[in-house]
Length: 274
Image 1 (tube, rainbow, N blue to C red):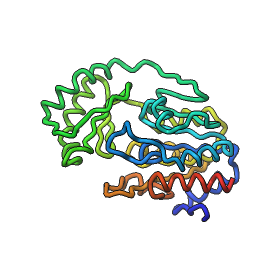
Image 2: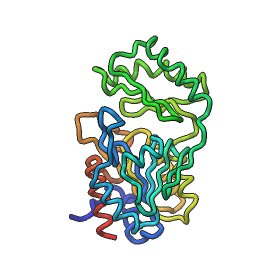
Image 3: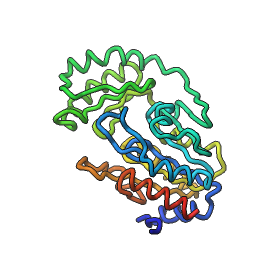
């Protein structure tokens, strides 16, 4: 089986450049929904074993592989099984943390996060958050999930305004995702994290794969690079379950693949080709 062909001319140019110049190429990937299947409990998420095997084969053949995630970097490394991979970096907490060659750098979270952490349980109770609503503490951010409720999208909309007010009161912002609202410091996103990482390297082709709204800033960053003459391939890990497709991402992607299994297959094909 050959590498699937991107649907756009820019994507085809990005793939061609990656295959022609692998030594300067960067392969950048989201974690949840891209390398790891989405599950009801994020603590149970694990990278697709086929993806990890493909990354182990691909990483020595390209300039760098980087995972860009909202999770703490150490958690992504553990859940991904990434320890020991060559030329491999994890940018956790949207770039606030960095794991590389077994070394983790992680600054202290801003004070607004602690204040929101203390006030969030009362706010959720007063807002009438139903059974199944739960909070994931990411250290530098807090994510309110509605996936386990009987009406995930309805509850998400019910909680959006009060959570935005709470975040604003403490200098944070709310980032929506698939049945999740994340309260975190402003000015921190996957686009900024990826741009900072790429600035450390000589310009080269970039592949980025993601699955949700939080990946749009990374798409934005790579589209800006395209205007500067640097090729890129934008990949969307598309939904293979009954959940709604993230149309904003899929519509802008050069290549759609069927979920983490499709990402793993794509990475494996690239490794074999290179």
